[in-house]
Amino acid sequence: MGFHVQNITCYKPTLSPTEFKISIAHRSATVRAISADASTMAVNSVRIAAAQMTSINDLATNYATCSRLVKEAASAGAKLLCFPENFSFVGAKDGDSLKIAEPLDGPIMKGYCALARESNMWLSLGGFQERGSDDAHLCNTHVLIDDAGNIRSTYRKMHMFDVNVPGGAVFKESRKEIVAMDSPFGRLGLTVCYDLRFPELYQQLRFHHGAEVLLVPAAFTKVTGEAHWEILLRARAIETQCYVIAAAQAGKHSEKRESFGDTLIIDPWGTVIGRLPDRVSTGIAVADIDFSMIESVRTKMPISQHRKPIEFWKQASV
Image (cartoon, rainbow, N blue to C red; front, side, top):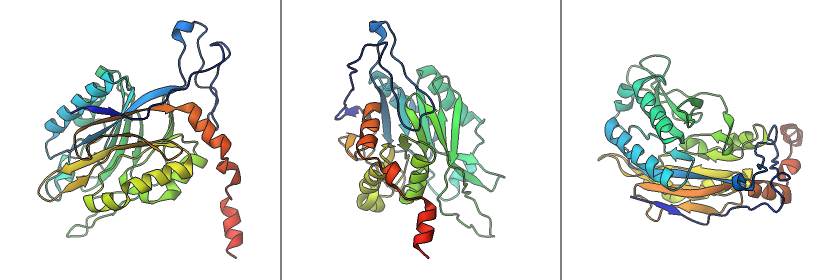
């Protein structure tokens, strides 16, 4: 158990506290101002953490692991902890997830809301088994909870395999809503796992929804993770000039299922700034979101101004 801090950088303002302001493209207004009291002067960064864990088919055991990781993140000074896909449950056989699926106001999610409130920490819960439109349907839902224990946003996984079971019943649902929201950690873009292979979603989050930090909770298989995990994440960071926080499931969940692991935090230049020393151990990676770096990268390489609109490509294809 433990956490790892790698390449953390903090920005120190050269202006006086009353003069210094933060201004970032796509933000609706100035979101941070420095107090005139020097003792309360803040730096232009905020600490976050990403978890790595091996969830199993036991809700109580997984909750205990999450609680322990929240304490580690709090001790490290993090204000947001991101959990991987299927953080609360990974079934041992087909159909297990459907059996334990609950609505967002059910006891499982209420327990995690209480955990956020009691720890005074925001939680990104990627890949919760939310009951769908009826008992035969399931949504893979990314839930964002604030430090008061309130659900602030939800994103239902867009790209997924809709699996048909015998008799023709579909038990997984995909949705079409892009979700981004303002937070103390910048404007967050919510995604889940398999979404990572579809860059159009991340382009939409950055250029049409103003995202600054992309959340990618995942449970990549060992085979696909070894081949594609890091390169896809770094590509999404580079092409959007966003931070990417990718919390990962790791190791063997059961005899039939194993995840690649390798939780990563990546900056807008595509550099890995947070990573556990062991790819499959349980623990947290910690890094700082440096808002001045987002602004600097986007100013020096203004791809938002240079990219072509969809109309250009339609005309170019004629």
